[in-house]
Amino acid sequence: MKEEEIIETLKRENQEFKKLSEEHRNLDHLIVEIDKRVYLTTEEEIERKKNQKLKLAKKDRMAVLIREYKKGLIH
Image 1 (cartoon, helix red, strand yellow):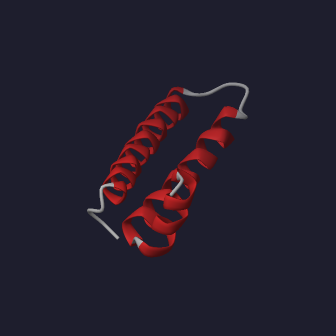
Image 2: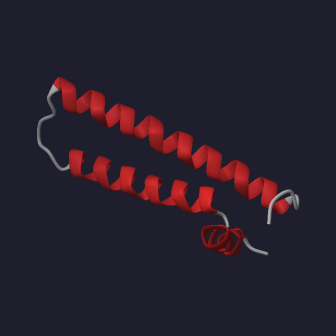
């Protein structure tokens, strides 16, 4: 099974993965919106960095779930 198929399966069958995927997408959208600004205040820069870290943490957890699925540890 290809990784894209695993991701789609997990989105349908694993609530944690589905939630992580949605949150990851929302954070990506927020970062894109912040990046559209010409100038960032200190607070906006901090918010951007925080969102990037949260997005990365969610991506890391999704990668763990994908590996566990491949090993047959989750269904």
